[in-house]
Length: 322
Image (cartoon, rainbow, N blue to C red; front, side, top):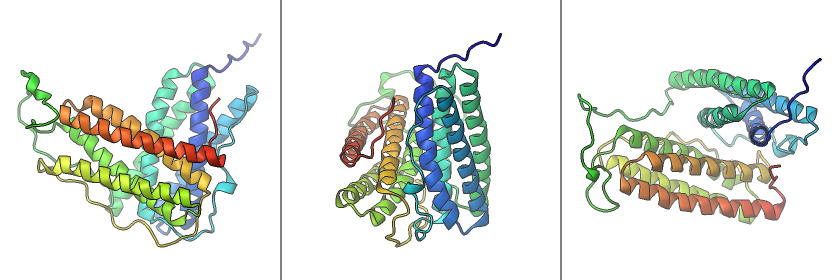
């Protein structure tokens, strides 16, 4: 006699819901990017990202339906206009895929750890393996094109160092020890993510028709520019090279390729990842002044996200989790 299938637990439902929302949003973005890509190698990468997002969303819908649970509304054809003129460059499309891969692998590793049912575990295992393969493909293409932004090279001491004094952590003001590689890595990643986010939000501000939404996007671009400046100064103050800003990744198009619902939710999603990144970076900084910088910036990012959620609620664009 076959054993009855175990009911989905709360963590499984939460992670399936979150993944479905992200994948349906990513599907819309990728459809547009594929339609506008001019470089064949980059188009192939974005096309593969599209295939993976579409399949994963379909698999999640099947799991939920089989358990008589509602499938989220998410995002669909009404949220994307593939005939809209080109808004982003091919290089940005590739950067966007790489950023999405990082988010998928980061979130999915936790989802897999919390999954109990075999079908859910299999889905998240496949998400990690296929995303890893896509990361290899995207990285190779970015290296071939010469557009991969790499972490800075630094000089490393020849022998290990054991901390002996509490002054290693330092204080919020005054002199500080040099950055260690963990802090430098988080700072580099913050600059990279803010650069990608700034381009995205500037593009959205060009095509948004609602004045309040446009203002929200422009404010996001200002926050991104400010954070890039703050993080870059932490590296340059210690003669560590800062990541070079990529060439222009925006056109002058003012025709929206996406619905304002999708654009707002996309920026709110990025905002949530930014807060999570800041928390990890602050915890691993081991320098009081840098931790204080992250705490200060986190408050600004959090307030921006809250204002975005309120705009979504006002316009009926916020879908609630179960």
